[in-house]
Amino acid sequence: RNAGILWSPTTGPGDTYIKRHPVPFAEYIPLRSIAQWVSPAAKLVTSDMVAGSGNGLVRGGPVPFGDVICFEVAYDDLVRSSVRAGAQFLVVQTNNATFGHTAETYQQLAMSRLRAVETGRTVLQVATTGKSAIIDPDGTLVAESGALYTPAILVADVRPLTGETLAVRLGDVPEYVLSALALLALARAVRPHRRRRARVPSATSEEMVTA
Image (cartoon, rainbow, N blue to C red):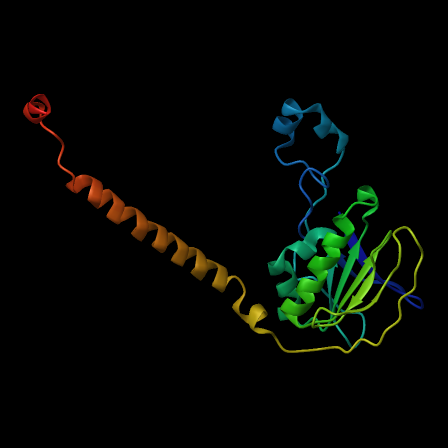
């Protein structure tokens, strides 16, 4: 399991969050027997991480927060569930060492900024190799670490927030509505074309000879 543990300097380990969306072909191999038959490289992932459950809410004091591990930040429904459960800010913990100096780290930071705006919550991104950042609910970078693989300490005031944004309340509804409208528009565009083709009379053999 890929887990985040809230650790108190006085009492030790507290609330624990288990990653709900392990990365396929990295943290587990789907259909392992078939995947290993297709490519021996599948054997390099020697164990399959088990997905957690729940809403990602971590309680360790007066302010509950939502825990997001690595690329779970790409899934808006997971982050929304934490906010709906009462998270007053979000923590994104990640280890991007595998990706080195590629753009992946900056891509993930952009996702965290999007989630801040979407949920109306401050986001604290904590990365082992960078980029770590403190992000305001409007997506502004309040503080961020410097070069990758460089130690850094970030300090800022974080205001716990409650309430739900329109994006959190509606969830995936706009996506479903827009998808349905697109399908209806496509259907309307195809049907007249078929009717026009059906109305065009085909030439008879006698007409073809006369021509």
